[in-house]
Image (cartoon, rainbow, N blue to C red; front, side, top):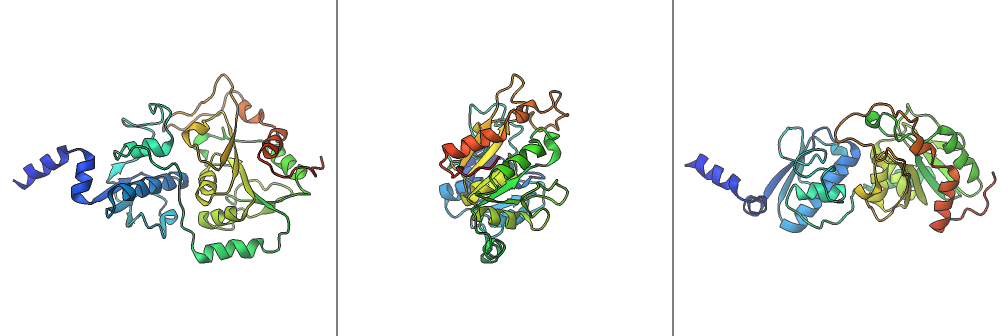
Length: 300
């Protein structure tokens, strides 16, 4: 009888199961930092819809979920509703123009979610950022130049371009470079590579006038703390998948773009990353001007 009742329960629409059970486990196996913030956004929307529902999240970058009131516990078990947006009925190749958050929310029967991500920084993390920026007089631009290698460097923007933009804006802004210790330091910026964890990096972004980077975890971090960000999309993927209100994209439209393939490691670009090379430092300056930032004292 118990097994029969369980089978009947599992046949109910998910929304009825959640209303009756009042708990749910979400899964994103081996999620990246950005994916983890997206899963947390799904948890937020579940709390908004169902109220006192107990939410467990498995196999994510759990440090980004610390202090999050929408997440009751985290774990490492391979169980739960799979939110991976690369496959299944709802995925980024069959999503009718939805954002990643919308795609993932459809997996738990939620329509029209709020398209934002959250992080709950501690007082100590905010104080860390305050302490490390206290003596900086000019407005801060945080930069992030690389992502993980899942894209096989298709998001790469030339180091010479990074150094040129820092040089062009050196009189008006102070640049802080965030990322891992194995990344190439950009001349003219303050090197914070490998000096803090992801949460502290996001705390530093919160202190910035704006963030400049590629599509990466720190783009999601900027969205989470509300810092305006100019993001170099190139042609690998489209801003339409994200649509955060404080993210301002620079996209290129080559005949081979977008080239992202669902859940597949990409080979090296056969066109030498033309879509990223086509984004010039001057285009970044134009975007800054359009957004109302002070770029009048550029010294080329």
